[in-house]
Image (cartoon, rainbow, N blue to C red; front, side):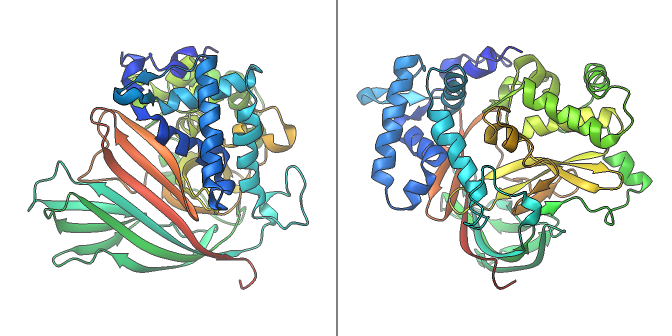
Length: 439
């Protein structure tokens, strides 16, 4: 499958690749630190980590990574172009930093939940993890430049979904509690209804305390009603789109085998073997079927990869749904998406295509299936289409850039407007406390 178009950012809506090169090198360096030197940065060696990231970025430019030149000789980059270039360089043998730093950092994140007595590669399956008590702070900062003072707003903050993977949720320290603000809770979100002031930004925040468990299937759990069967096999839902092409591909992948688990395994293997996981500019997809766009371009992110997997499952009448939230790793509490598939005798089974990265593009057998059927601790906030957050008054717009940056004890995710370069909104998740001994 061809990956060039999506990698260099010229397909879809017809934007020239140079449009996306709008992030200054200093910010790209911070982002690279988060990808490959997160533990060093949190350990106090942030200066050394930045130097290493700067050297790597310079080396990639010498290898052919495009960049733009701004005033004062400031170089500008497209984060998608950078990450996809680095992975292609790693897979072609031109540069080893993706494997040595990015993949290994991700593996260390996974290992951190396991005892030092298990230094194996990979560690034991997530299903053996004990319950762990967490306290986290989630903040979302909104840019209000386009909102006139006095206008009523509806703003939202994600809230954890309580299920087998998360229980005993307690919410505290909700802010702001401004005069006239109405705060309410719905499935997957806290909502603020308030009036915009002259301040040009506002930050919503809450502390969440809960007990997290590894997520596994539960044969004694959910039983699908006819309504749920219809809901989770619908051919069209957001990025999930079953077409005749998707249905034919699913039939070819799954074969005549009637066993649902083995069919899911074949779909999983197809995706790991035929796609490259990186960053996608969603405005490039345009009005195309998202899953067909992924197949045509050979590249996806976690959300689009899961949407393809779910579309393939639904075409075979296997109930499947998209779930999302935040990873709970101490130095990289990023937003993330995974899929949940209903398998008779196993219940809702989670699968996380992050295994592509963990297994260096599907190559390491031990890591390849690590999140096939069980997940480590997650803060799940969405089970689409019924549990979701949404932005309400503040919208992402047609095109944006997304960056994960390091903060002490967690991570910051910035959504930046492609047209203006300004912040749209920013999520910050900090792990305040975690303990597996007192549960």
